[in-house]
Image (cartoon, rainbow, N blue to C red; front, side, top):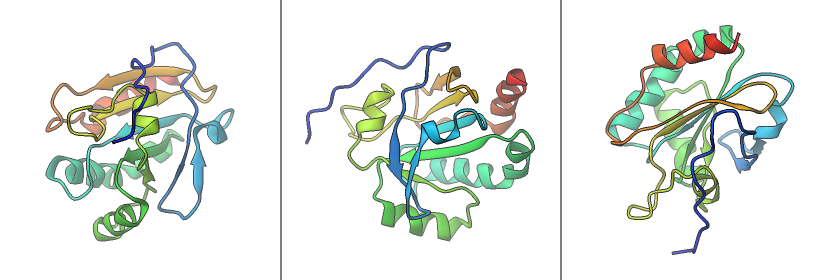
Length: 159
């Protein structure tokens, strides 16, 4: 296991820590590439092909048009390898690309890496188009998730 520098969860009102990760689209996606263009929902999820994660990713697909109406990019991130995430995306017919934090650096940077299980805890970070963190929620139990309606409420507060 690599020694990772696990940071505290970023504070609302602070700049969101930048990162770049490989995606199921076949290229790296950087958080900073959205700055000045659109808000971003970063959604850490523990593992592909698991119950709650699958429900969550299906909900993002079902509500994709609602997020698009608000011009919000969704960046789901897990520690799974990119190839596994490609298969997961295809199996579920997802509309969003998934990001692979296989080295766990971004999960550690955002303070959501479980040191016991070595995957990220379920967490949500809403970043405005200026790159500032406007809402954050880390689940205390990974079998729970936020409903999209609650996330959309937070998005509407940005507008």
